[in-house]
Image (tube, rainbow, N blue to C red; front, side):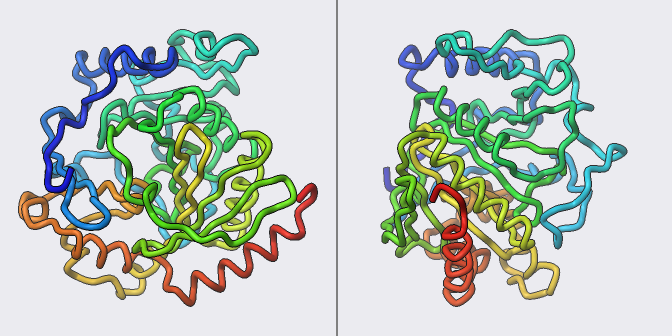
Length: 350
């Protein structure tokens, strides 16, 4: 697919899980109602030639239309402030359906669209500023008004959503505060992109295997230093380990991003420091002018560009330079790796 343009809305049609078919239908309905800030089907997208095959999408002015960031970027954990925008304030039309886990088959896994979201239920909402087809927000226990902070239960919900999709092109992502989450109300994102992300193709080297069968790898020859978690006797085992590492990073004020891949079989965890560089005045002006926020999709290799010039001139070399600037240095990453492995050895059941 080197240098090839493609349609962001392309998908397998009838070859979908019951959950994904319902999600696509509901999302298309919201598109027909004109609820999105732009038409994703008209946004130019291409795969860049090179080793990694980064994906670039042009959405001019997206950063000026989306909901603004209303908190400081130097603290991963910040208290929820009800006066600021949160997902309890969205239009009811933005709610696709309530998350309603059952012991029945996947067709019953999600209930119908509620008029209002009930207490302690989770919800899937449209992202009104989408960067891909069926771009949605998963909001665990939406009425509990939880801050943007991973816990074991919420991460397991996100893993279940990825599993229910039963499709490698539908990924679930998470951005911490300081990792370019823009709303301090607990949420994950997900969308469908019928191409393999560059990070999913990256070479890895094994670091260790834990007592519950989960293996941890680090990325090799990829511009972002990061971790890959996979294995374990069950999805719950994998979710437990990754959520524990996320909690460790949060409590140590380390911004990070997570990609749940291959229907929950693989999870990439990518620590970063770009917001800190911005605050310290150490970010390159070239990239500041491009107004790219390196959240999970960008770090994984799908970059949304806001200016025609940047899209036309996009190259693998420039994207790599930007991602290297956003990522931890090798020294910083190795120190974090040491601390993380030390933390994991002290966990029960591992």
